[in-house]
Amino acid sequence: PHMTVYKNLAFGLKERHTPKPEIERRVREASAILGLDDLLQRRPAQLSGGQRQRVAMGRALVREPKAFLLDEPLSNLDAKLRVQMRAELKRIHQRLGITTIYVTHDQVEAMTLGDRIVVMSNGRVQQIGKPQEVYRRPKNLFVAGFIGSPPMNLLRGRCTDGCIRLGELELPWSGPDAPEVAVGLRPEDLRPADGAGPSLEFVVDVVEPLGNEVVVHGTTAGSAVESGAEEEAEIPLVVEGARAAITAVFEPADEPSPGERIRLGVVPERVHLFDLRTREAIGR
Image (cartoon, rainbow, N blue to C red; front, side, top):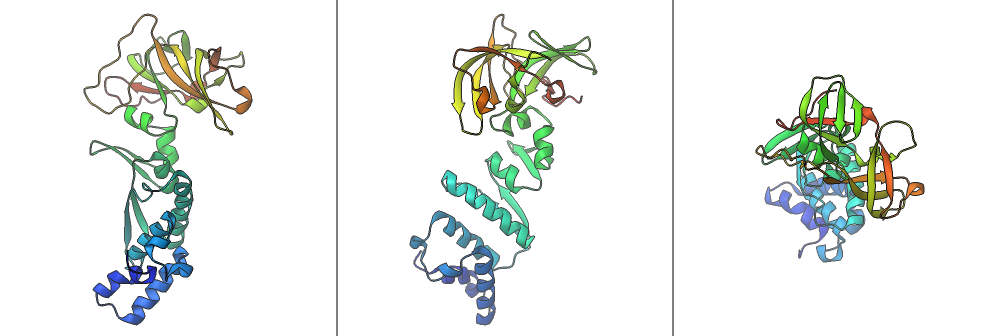
């Protein structure tokens, strides 16, 4: 903390007895890449949180590594700065082309920064794939509930006689019968029904206007399923008259009122299915 940015960047190289001309070259190159040229004579106390993060990256960069390992690199930043630093990290990675491994609990960071994602739970790999692949085709219940904000709605249903049955809702199904399934519905795939096609009854509870979208919380008939990866997780019981909490994302023009009863349109092609006994996805 008592050293300038320049000395912080050079510190590791000096400890390795790197020649001074080489130290100068590497520090200048790293500072140019990270946009630190005007900050080299400042001390850490004079830097913003984002600038300190760039200095920390610079200390690794001057060593000319074959790979980066960044453990929760944005965890100590406020929301606005986190968005800015995500873009900066992406830009730096694209410019350098160095293999970078990010460790994060923030699924937004994982989705935006990663070319490929490894989703883990309790030390076990749950799924590996490109961000959109993991989002659109979650391999199991844990991934389905973990990736996505708001998370996927998971309701208990069954597949019989060529139909996916979820309370009063029936959707076409061409696979084998499955008496115990979780039916997954992404909040952004649920919109006010236009009168045609399958729909769910929905009672609005809480409305969150976010400007570009409206997050709507409410309930529908049925039983919710927990997405946790516990192998011993119990299959929810069917309770007569039970209601499950679900979330939908609407356009601002469709904003409902708390207490309002509406119907949510369901697109059959966007429904996800999971075997409740194995907790694995069922192919459609």
